[in-house]
Figure 1 (cartoon, rainbow, N blue to C red):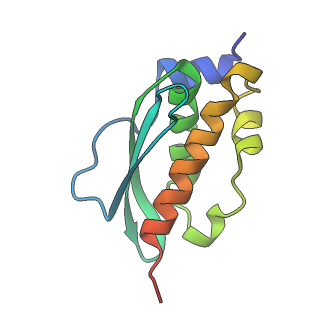
Figure 2: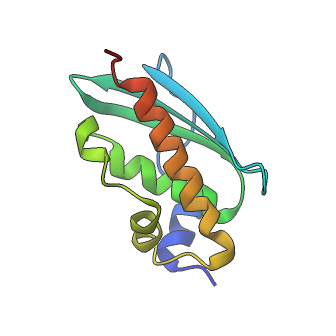
Length: 121
């Protein structure tokens, strides 16, 4: 049902935990399934210098959050605009239709984090 890549991210999540003194911290929820994803990041010189997540949710949500942190760490904010739910799903070896919400939750978290990190004019 789940790909080896997805199961690896679930069983050995990358960047899980709390991040002391983050530049920004957000939390998003999926009211339908009840999954909750928290992202925190440190921004230095326009780059995500550090990122951590906490997730209370299904296998796919934890895996998507783990993958998302790997993708965004070290990258500049403008490089993150092309990430979408399909690219997250593909990178995990595909998500079953019943788990597609997990990639959307991760994407919602990324968008909220970027909104918090970008300076307002």
